[in-house]
Image (cartoon, rainbow, N blue to C red; front, side, top):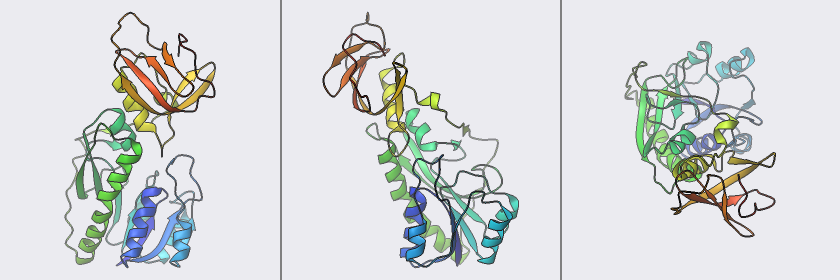
Length: 293
């Protein structure tokens, strides 16, 4: 089966590598030279060169030149894993078996943008690795495969990302065999069911100490690497925060944002319902005890 591959993030790289190592026929790859919107960007070109696969660097995947490049590879199926732009109908109808997309959420719920970040930020207990046949809308096509993934309180963006990859890679190899045999299962989505998450902004990543300790913990772990990091606005500057822990603090007459403890490395800040200890951060100077954030 002739597979054309589209992707530009770490998951794309892992998926393409697994397909190549399993001996699947990859007839071409479309990727990007860099990405300002994907913090987990990964360059696929070295992998393509190692396996002597035609690789095209694109900006607009729907551009006529890119459509022609893909058509000329005569793919039976296209895998699009880790791509932030919608595919138009001219591209969708190229491969006879369709285009398979991936979304790390339990669609039809939680379609849309930043699924790993939102899942952690909202404190969800489960997510999923979902593969589906793409259409012109975002994450609404027939479901091909879906495996539930637990989310633990100890998880952050990196650990959850890696566990989703661990679940998804075997599924890619399985659905590849199903597509070859024509025995794939298609479960249509009810487009009126579920929900879609919106695009996040910089403001969504700002720590406000009027939030609860758990909300701050969830926000920080959701945005830690490979993503952009949560931030604290202090003295006219943004400072990244990569890790915090919840601290018991029972006094109810202390205002949120007050520095309760500070040493040369860490500091503790009062929250709406307790306190958090700022563990990993990019503060150039630790705020003094009694100062306010």
